[in-house]
Amino acid sequence: MKLKKKIITTCVLIALLPLILGLLIGGVIVFRQFDKINEAYGINEKRFTVIQNPMIAYNSIIKKNVERVKNGIEENTEKLEDTEYLDELNNNLSEHHTTLFVRQNGKYIYKGKKGILEYLDIYFPEYGNGPGNPGSIYINSESFSVLMEQMDFQGDDGDRFSVYLVMEVDKILPEIRNGATQIMLAIILILVLLGIVTLIWLYRLFINPLTKLSRATHQIMEGNLDFSIKTNRKDEIGQLQNDFEDMRLHLKESTEQQLYNADASKEMMSNISHDLKTPLTAIKGYAEGLLDGVADTPEKRQKYYKTIYAKACSMEELVEDLAYFSKLDNKMLTYNFTVISLKDFLKDCIEDVEMDLELRGIRLKESYQHCCDVNVIIDPDEIKRVIINIIGNSIKYMDKSEGCVSIRVLSDDDFAWISIEDNGMGVDAKDIPHIFERFYRADTSRGTKTGGTGLGLAIAKSIIEAHGGTISANSVKGAGTTVRFSLPRERTKEGAE
Image (cartoon, rainbow, N blue to C red):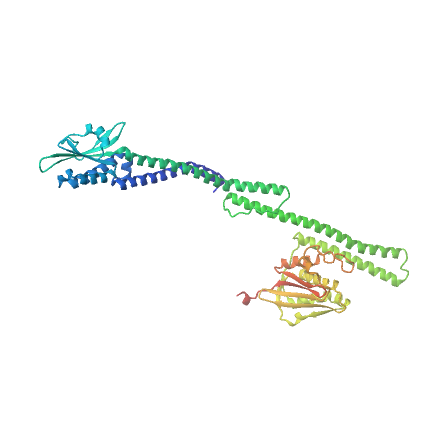
């Protein structure tokens, strides 16, 4: 639901809910109140009939009392002269605010409540002059409000009895008024509670999340990105908060990456400057020696030429690494995947580094030659670069007189796993999580013997991941390093099935 519709719906509910709830609760109170009256006075009329015309209820009450009196006296009029019986009958009638009066031959022989007789005596009809049955007389004045019913009986000896039932209506009215008071109090309570609930709801629905967004905006303006406003709400405001949270995370990640790249770029520039300056200084020095005639023998000149060539090759390698990584970083490198025998491919890679290993006196253990051959889907040139980079690091950081590099191959249904292990100087545990990061070098001294840009393993990681594989390393300082990576296997028809 749109925010505009929610606001409109809220306003409509605020207007209608008090009315609806007031009517519902008021109706419940009225019905319960009249149910109590009906139960107390034995009224069988419908609720709406009683609410519309309370006089019907009064008549119903007094008629039931008339029936009670008639049933007890008609068969035995002598009861009208029995004071104990009349007292008991009057007590029962008093529960309905009704008083009993009996007149015999025009003379009162029983007065249930003497206090009101002086006001009502003039209204009591003589024997035979009543309104008829059924029928009631309503008498209303400033002092009282009553409903009267007259019953005439004739005794066996010819005596004439008039029995009057007087119901004090004004004593029943407070019960009705009490129901109205309860309705008013209930409506006031509903309005107060609804107001409180509405305020809380509006605060939670609009004010609280908007306040959080405002605070979050100010924190971002101040450069603080270490907070969270993620929510489980599914509406537009919840979506806005989650979008803002995603933006914050993206901005934080971007800022951290920018800071890291800035630091890495500074480090790279410093490293490149150092790595270029060293061979350039050597080239310049040897070139000056040649120009100044310092190399005055063919042997010295040959040595100077070789040194200049070697330094130029080192600079070329550095520039090539930088250009290659730039292509990787900008996703400009195109891979040419092909299916190839892993055993034949590794043999070809070893031939490229075999001479470098021999020159350093490093023994190569090719245990992969004894395992079953598998076909892999790779770009041979790029994976060869990975293997040469890893073995090149093993050669570069070898500090043992009897160096050894071992290549092992394992495979499962989906991948071939290649491990390249050496017994070189190893890497500190604190450096292991970072060795695949661009521009990172564990050798912070950047000596000429082990110098480089720190891009070799970063390039290897990018290439392996582009092939859908993974790469990892573990190392023990002084004992050697193992680099392990996976390459996707060709899925045969049998394997695919």
